Image (tube, rainbow, N blue to C red):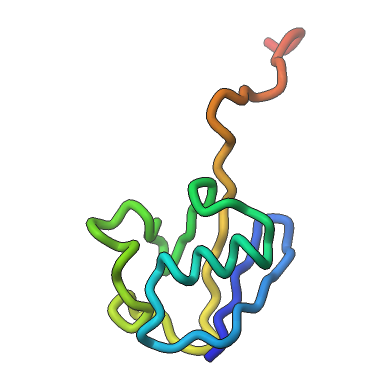
Amino acid sequence: MEVSVRRPTGETHVLSGLSPQTTLQALQEQLATVAGVPVPLQRLIWQGAVLETQEGAEGRTLQELGVEAGHVLHLVVRREPGTFPASREGLP
């Protein structure tokens, strides 16, 4: 089965070769390879919920999470630890 992962930029990555028994961790590892975003920086959102923050979600399968073929997950990339937002100097 295929699942799409969309970034805020509009870029979409299609992950194929998945099955309902694929774990969230395995999906994130495949996404890291395809999108170049390390697993710790991935924040996946599905049906309004952040998947990583759900208790034990990493080991849960796509079927358990309700993710089916053709569904779209949304990826938000976290900032790397130690990085700061651009300076707000000169702003009110």
